[in-house]
Length: 380
Image (cartoon, rainbow, N blue to C red):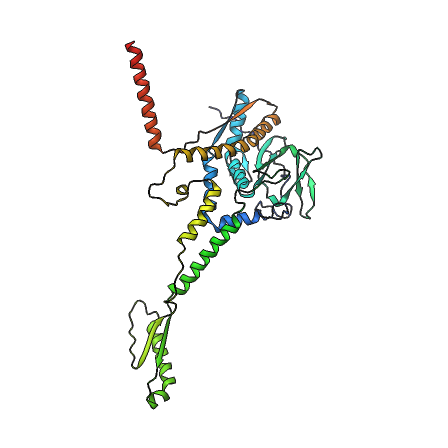
């Protein structure tokens, strides 16, 4: 069977929002309107539970599929969703939406770009750093213009603004930028990190035991005269006894009135369980996730109730409503650039948060109900 010749790859256009000073897309802050954005990324690195919470929200939002009635358009969408390059290091439309959604949760504002090739067709997706873009209210007072910030700090209008994507999370009325999911947590997390640093310092002092060796000379004249020399000998012998000798035990023998005590043994270490838990409760409440999903077993019988599942499902549905227009715009652009302007629909995977046992039991009850209904119908 003769294989079809693959279409030669054409060169991609340079993204309009590509930083001109560096070729990378690592976020480095720099916007006056979102001064906390860089803090939020540092916060995710410092508090692992926040990073885990955002990752779980991205995964719990689930996958999606794009359906189009036209078969030719459907083949184009399937190929694009499966193999489109994303920012040069990922592949697939799902990978782009995951990274885009993660930036949206972290910064409250997410910007994306559809990159075209030499044939003016959509061929790649790109997520720029927020430091390379700026938002400006359009002249009509409703739309938002996405400007490219060059290396000199000058904001310039994009040549093809229709290829740019923008999403904001719960913006303040009249504001251009959204609110991060982590807003309000830097102060609380700062207290948590201060407690952790204090615990580390205490363990460094107390865990690495230090001794205070005291020698008290007697009232004898000779003993008082040689007190300095004897103190030096005791110090040398004590250092030799405490020195690591490959696991061998060394004894320290001395005469006279001596006392040996551990430095800091009388100090009371503060109990950190209660304050740490109180702070973690505030942090986890902000994420909207049940504690046990993040590895916290604060109750021996803790599990996700029906009410918790419904609340979390509503949160995920709200996130999907923000992401769906982005997916639709990307797919419409892909088809339009190929001359296939067809209607399409985005279908998200079902959210299943209940226990598998409960789901199996519900299916069993439904099957039994259908069986009884069939029997009743046969008897009649």
